[in-house]
Length: 358
Image (cartoon, rainbow, N blue to C red; front, side):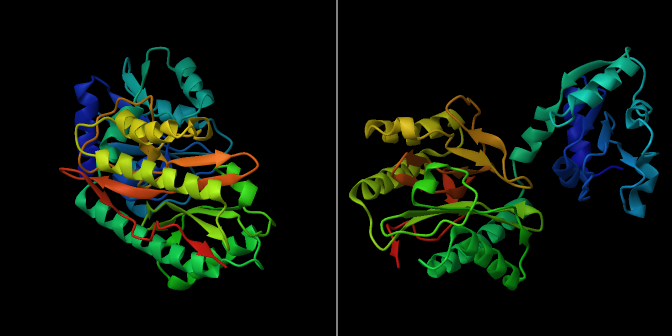
């Protein structure tokens, strides 16, 4: 199987003298071919050779479209699928492996084929996927517009009568009623002190006056994901949480203002982190400032203080500083941005004004 993207990826592997690239991440296969596969715990890989031909190693229990049968090496559920992978690889080859392929499979192939040499090949496809083309960017814009609509609905539904879990259920029911795309995963909805955990899972907690309400979620539109966070307050805003909210918003604005081609991911993170540090809250900002998004909700580039990755037009990532104070609560504000030729395009339009709900 050969596509325009497999041809471009083959050029990249030839340039670094790799003969074959083993890809096990389903989103890599979706990106290259448009095929959506869900192999579960069974071995499934795509093997790309240096000429751009893509073959699949597939368990017979996994349904695949007949259009790609000629490109599949099947194995029985009781067989070791690694032998099928080995059958596609020439003698004495250099093999790149993506970081998703488990150590068990990789070490098994190495023991079967002592003539092969191995290297980490993840960066080859990740660098391609980081730069979205025009069609991908438009799908991400649509996905984010749907997310804005869902956030507007969710904020209007906040009530002291609803638990975190019940509010989350209303969100997904509303999204389903739109008939636009698919659920992108779970939602983070956290009230009050629960918001100290950046990845809190909604539970039966109910609101009390002065609680912050952190809402972080996204959906999928034709495979491309959205992700946004807003924080509002129930009935009243405690003085320290109001101060924290304004700091987080300033930090996000500072980071977005710095985005342009040629800046590093680490510089963007530092722009947000420096402002939070200046107000004495750095110890309460425990995570990176952002992550890439596309076919996966978390993918490169990662906007982290340790990253020297240079930003390029077409990259898409979140900017989401947060402050989480034990015993008090948390605040996070998140938008998705596209790196443009001279700055950043914000994909989210839902208000970031300090908001109370009742």
